[in-house]
Image 1 (cartoon, rainbow, N blue to C red):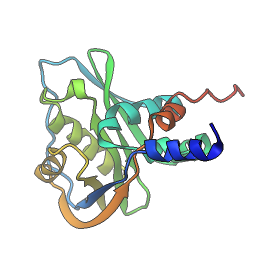
Image 2: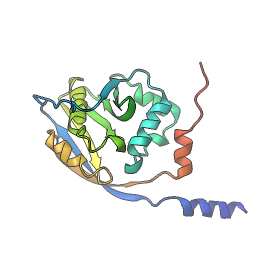
Image 3: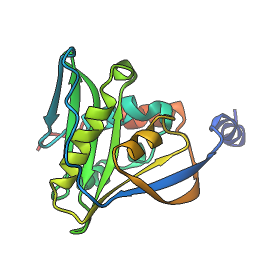
Image 4: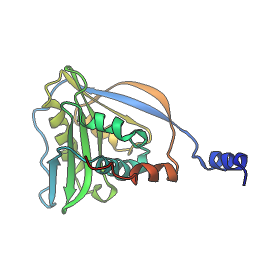
Length: 201
C-alpha cells in the first residue's frame, strides 16, 4: 500500500466534526445551603494532591467519552501537568462503593472568577440521586476560592440534564456560541490514555 492510499484511509476513518452550541453560565451569589449526599449510598469525595497525569486522563476519558471531552486528551504531558498543578487548582474524585465514580476540577483562573472546569459522573453513578449533592459540592469548592463569581459552561453534547441542573442550583445563562467538536479516533484516544508513564526522576 502506498503513502497516498494510507493518507486516504486515515482521512476516511476520521470522525466528522460535530457542531455544538456552548452555553456560558454565571453564579454571582453564594448559596445559603447545600444538599446532603444520599444516606443509603456508600460515597466519598476526596481532594487530590499531585494527581498522576494518567489518572486525570482516565477520569476525563471515562466520565467524558460519551460527551466527547477531547481537549484535555490532546494535551502533552507538559501542558497537562501545568494545568492541573496550577496554583489553587482543586480536583476532587467521587468514589462509590470504593471505586471511582466521577470528579470535578475547580480552576480559579483570576482573583474575581473561578471556573468549574470539569464536572461529571461515570454512567454507573447516574440515576442514584447524587447529582444535586455532587454539583453542590463543586459549587461550594469553587466559592471557597474567594471569587466575585463562579462560572461554568455546557454544550449540546453534554447530558441533557446538565443545563437544567446548573440553573436549578443557581447558575444563570449569560451567552452562547457555536463551535465544532473534533472527535478523537480510537487510535488517538488510545495513544492519549495509554501513553507510557514518564521516566522516574
